[in-house]
Image (cartoon, rainbow, N blue to C red):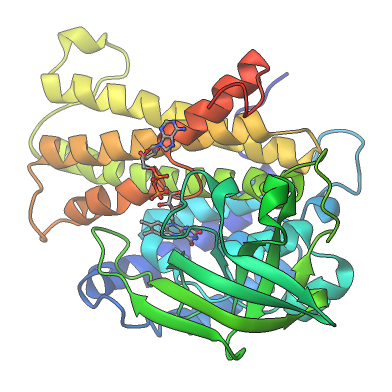
Length: 401
Ligand SMILES: Cc1cc2nc3c(=O)[nH]c(=O)nc-3n(C[C@H](O)[C@H](O)[C@H](O)COP(=O)(O)OP(=O)(O)OC[C@H]3O[C@@H](n4cnc5c(N)ncnc54)[C@H](O)[C@@H]3O)c2cc1C
């Protein structure tokens, strides 16, 4: 039987994350939206608490808790592991503030990459670092197979050359997981990820972006010029296996897309709750026992938004649960990301409209701006739909572009 409630064991984590989100993140949400590029120092103490949660094996609320093998040791029966707990924690934290969660030390998307593909030796070296993720380039976004940053083997090192744009936490993180090609003529199979630590000669932060939303989170342009990293910094296998293609690096997305979907759900829930409060103050009653078409137009609209929210929430839990239970979840991860990304944009904009909340007096205005990126990074809406279509129709990426 399908049980659609979050597991009871996750109750304490959810409650802790909720308390932290309401007492630490919400109160400083507007402050750091206005103070773009200022580091939210309140997060240092908070990050230590998250480290504790992650190391205790309870899962956390950032990307650090998503190691596949560790969550899959016991393959018998139903398992609610690190992926599900991290998704549940992330929802609560992003109810507080998504940009501040993205600014949380040691919870970067690069940490998710390290957690999912690093070997034990690399995990020991890099597991405690705060790691950003650098895939996108000036001429390559959705089509990540078109990466031009190169990694050339030279003695005990790889030498990296290229430029990366839109790197979340690119300035603040201790290290960056950089996607680069070992051999452009070998296509996708030659794309590997490399951990480059801050301070490595040849690694430069060029500038920070000024953005529409998630302004508390730094977004950087990075340059690598003859940047030499030890061979042991390549994550996964160095072998260029054209049969396996992109499998190694793409595996990361199966773990990170449910996390981005969870971020969207947290923001959407914040907007729905605030709108419900404003509607109630205005005397609009949302009645769950009556058909939408005989209710106040605002109540009917609200019910529609809640239905979208609920569908996105359940898809996200399913994709994380599948990862915990060693079930291939690429399809579900993309479905969750597509549904949650689109829903959060629709929900937050409609909430601004329903509540008449267009000024900075209300966080609804901010959430509507923060929402858009959640439908863009870790694969846009269109790319998620493309992946879903390929999986459902059984087509390869060459057959359906
Ligand atoms: C605030 C912010 C933070 C980010 N953080 C990171 C990060 O930490 N690391 C990182 O590597 N990147 C990051 N990104 C980059 C992000 O992942 C890319 O912007 C995204 O992948 C889209 O790439 P693009 O902008 O080059 O758009 P393009 O790929 O040029 O796409 C433009 C439009 O065309 C559509 N499109 C493209 N191909 C197809 C197709 N085959 N079929 C249908 N439609 C298609 C897209 O969906 C999109 O709507 C970030 C971006 C932003 C804005």
